[in-house]
Length: 430
Length: 167
Image (cartoon, rainbow over all chains, first blue to last red; front, side):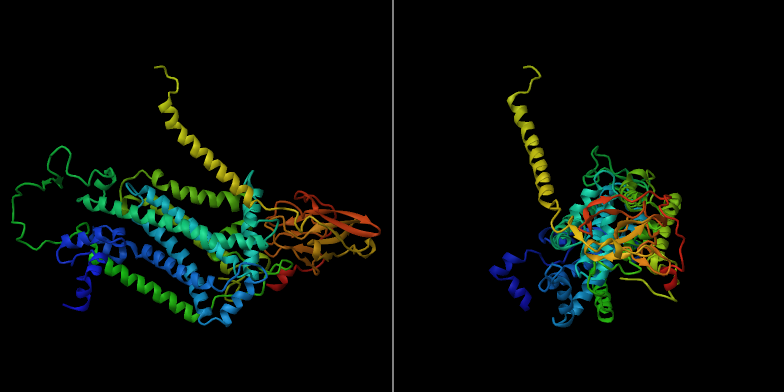
């Protein structure tokens, strides 16, 4: 009996660890029900979900980056006072006086950028897989909300260093809100806490950044994961053609035996009862993509590796590149060019060409609403790419336009928003 | 029993009404609590210079009022530094004699008329008064900028733009 087993065998140990030894599949399933964290996972997933090609583990990556942001953010909170008199100096002293301060700030900054990337890429991957279709429509909606909250978290954090980059990006960002019809001015004032970006704005953004939005994100992620687990089990239970049955499933129906007592018919063969042909144990079964596999250990081990890989990348970037800190915020001097954070660069590019009501309110509003409505507008139940040409092409066109606009705004714009070639003059800000 | 609300139905509906009222009260409280208290430090009257010191071919910046003073057709005007597009501070470019916004490239002439760029109107102005020979800018009273196309003065750019210079 090794040490671990001896600890588990004590009265205290037995009261803490309820997970049985995972010898049989039944033990493994029981382990899921007995553990809080494991409970977030379904017991089984389809075999295809183990592959990198399926999800690129982008959901896991987003979650790991959020964890990294929570941990590094808590460290930073010990050394930061959200007031215009202190904020900039606090960031400077974090970088120069606090042990590993610069490093922690780097981790926080780069994790934030990477999380925006990971969440957006996760959404694109889910779209191309058609995974927003029945019964997962609402989980896609929650995902869109998570993207919005992620962007808001990143944007509110952008102001906190109180440098020129922060001050003017937030001035422009909040000015867009003023163009919302009827309530725009009030919304802007509510965000700023005054007529311009000032001490009230800094405090408001801080409270949103460290309390309101993280709580909202955790709540939404919880619902997102819970739904993923439920829907995943529905999908696993729908054996057979991946195109047809899943879309027709009603939540809860597939979890139980057929209501009418008829045996399940899969691809024209009766599953229950005597099936003519070779005995079941005869040939080694060739596993298909839809065969269910145990989450523990198959999926868990892959998630652990993916999480470590993401953390490794973040820590490496943080070791290599320092988070930028420009000169202290100066309300009497707008830097030229003034750039929004990169994930708003596409909007800023649009703002240079269209009326702010269009570029700052209608376009982002239409994007968010359109994304949320997508699973209800796309009535095609097919999942396979060749039957989804129009959806895939439309989405790709929008995605490419957005990426081009982002690149142009981020790297190809110089003083007074004039065109520059990034290899001649670099004006990108991260 | 008629269709009138009986006690059971009243109570069953009552908690929903109560919850709605509570939510409304919460929203109202939040709004009232977070609504900015305007007027603190802003909207003040700023004493500046005498009218003779205001130039007629360039602008004079008054940082305390976040405004520029200039003379248009012999009259002193105070232009708000805030771009009417998205609130960036608009600097005056000496080489072109125009205002050039660094954020999205809107150009205004010396009178604040909109020339090119995405801003929806000309630069906003503040009310000015001459009190005891000194110009007073009333930052509490904004005069909305003129609509695009209006030409208060006809001053073509006198040289290269600052943004182009840089690039």
